[in-house]
Length: 395
Ligand code: PMP
Image 1 (tube, rainbow, N blue to C red):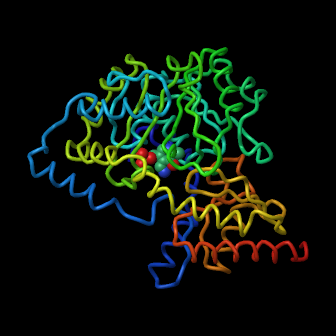
Image 2: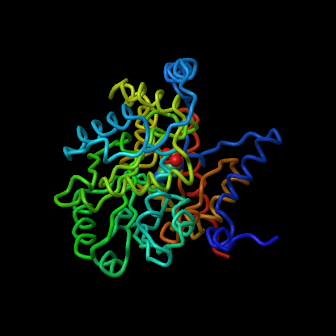
Image 3: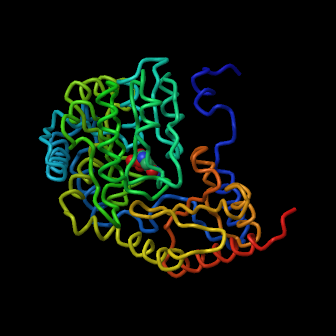
């Protein structure tokens, strides 16, 4: 069957990097106990109060088409939230509601990049980034970072890649590294994109999950509001991954362009989901902290268990999001080989760093998405396993 090249180009035709996850799922389905630390999703479900709001809205008749950029009340609430959190003047005209942050990522690249344009993203990266960019016809170009720099880009690497680039996609707090980028890093990024005339696309879907330091939206840096597009989402902040509710915050012309695109793609977001999102946002900061709290606790557990020196294993400073990154290069194994053996020998599934780009080779991503005691037990066993690998005679 002949399908569009656009789609085969999205994946590059190689493995999708989720082999360990599929194996772990198959083991679990066959009744074998597996500790699964692969998936970036809360171990709680959407709060019943939010579901009640969704149900009330649907029963009240909010089940028809929603045209345009989203319900006015929700756009206004998102604008107010962003303005409060960043200090940057933001009106409803700067906001479009999208079916999740992912749709916002696609739409932003779609309206900013022409086919063949260079679109940069930071490596390591969230697994959908290269495919999302390629789906728009742009050329997806990774910008490498180093483990030793906590995976934050240097001025040199930015200046080497930015000439001629249309967009640069960044993500802080970061998936997969669990790093919150520092103010100097973001100032460096802002300076570089300004000098090179590049759009900045800032994926901030983890902005309520900060364990250390502060979240700084680069849109709040001087002169950046007119060249920054921010991706937001209810998925992580309110445990609403399945509801598919996100947004793009951008200059009004970009919002208008994404609205035009939406008319031919998503046709808006279900009105009862938008009403539930508005209700959820109105629950305030304490609600959001409660959703983030389990990850904060588990990050503290990880600091206690893995924060010191460990043979074969180093914890990258974990300051946000629901993930830990472990540097296991001292074991001599690749991330893939380590993850495969860990699953076979310890029945623990983690994501190989290689699934998130060449820069994360020799690392593992651990999702902090299981109950505290089981999580602590898994970390102790991963550390012990790394220690045993280090002791193995070299072949
Ligand atoms: N960006 C990052 C960095 C993510 O990790 C995710 C989801 N895992 C998304 C965007 C997309 O989130 P959603 O579409 O659910 O809002």
